[in-house]
Amino acid sequence: MKTVADSVDVRVRRVYEDPRDDDGARVLVDRLWPRGVSKTRARLDEWLKEVAPSPELRTWYSHDPAKQAEFAERYRAELRVPGSAQSHALELLHAEARAGRLTLLTATRDPALSEAAVLAELLQEGKMEA
Image (cartoon, rainbow, N blue to C red):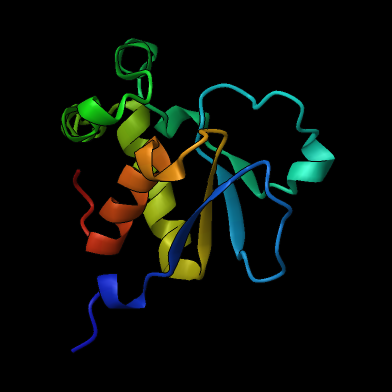
């Protein structure tokens, strides 16, 4: 039997990279607009800033690789808050992922250390809850 996770194609890329024809839906998941990128150049289908980590969590994390595991755990906890803007935004991403290829975009220098990587993992797990 095919599960949701089997049918989900989620990619993580930097918003500074040139768009590709095979990106599918392009969704920026950063709370802040990336410097030096025009909306035309970004070719976004959506800017879902509500799914981004809270400003407090983002500031604490500061993309420190030593804090990545704890960041992912704290971020998942934020996404689990019932009725929150973040949990609603995660539901929207789940729907996008089920509809076809989804590329999560971030301005982070190392996308593997970003909230986009945590989101991609959640979507690939096929869980509605974080």
